[in-house]
Length: 93
Image (cartoon, rainbow, N blue to C red; front, side):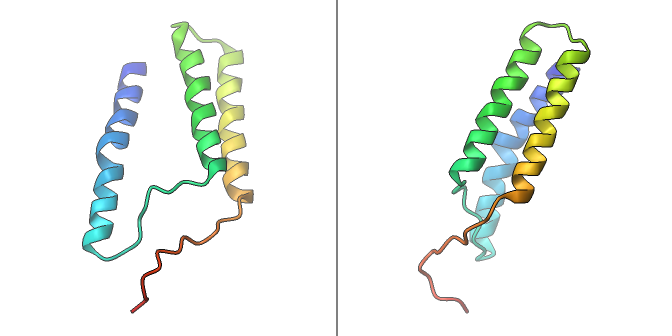
C-alpha cells in the first residue's frame, strides 16, 4: 500500500502539475510554480517526515500521530499564510 501511495504522489508531481501550468498558458491564466518560501519549507519538512516514517517498514501509533500532527501543521500553516499576489507585469483584459 505504501508503494501505491508513493507512486500516486509521484505521478501527480510529474504529470498533473506541469499539465496545469501548460493549460494555464493555453487559457491565458496565471498558474506559475512560484511558491512562497513558507510553502517550500512545509513541503520539504513533509517529505522528510514521510521518508522517516516509511524507511522503517513498520509503523505504530507514534508514527501515525506524527503524520497527523504534520497534516494539522500544514493545514494551520496554509490557513494563516498571507498570500501576496504575483505580478506578471502584463496588462489585464
